[in-house]
Image (cartoon, rainbow, N blue to C red; front, side):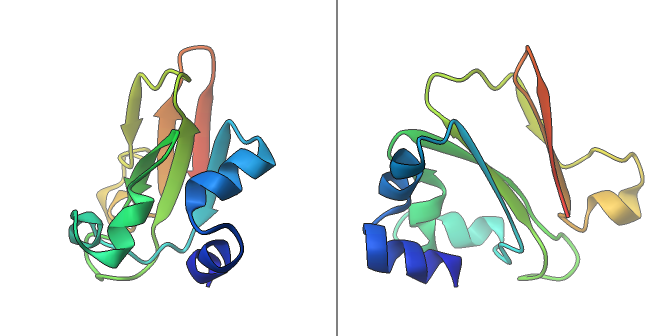
Length: 111
């Protein structure tokens, strides 16, 4: 998995994103739920990694399916983040689309 590869080669996600010099990084098929990101759980290390904030979309009907995340470097403004993007409840609750509004641009993380 992506997570195990990052940990094996870079120890933590923040090191990997720093090596890439990424301002924003998007990932799909996260297959996590909000409860998976609670402090103390192994998967919580991806909620907020050093130097970056994570914005998540979760599948609300089938736990541990789908899901996307957008990590944004500290200092880059995020005015809002939502998975209520399409305006169609059946699609929005699948966790396949996340919109982050950065003021000067809007980013869609979709699969």
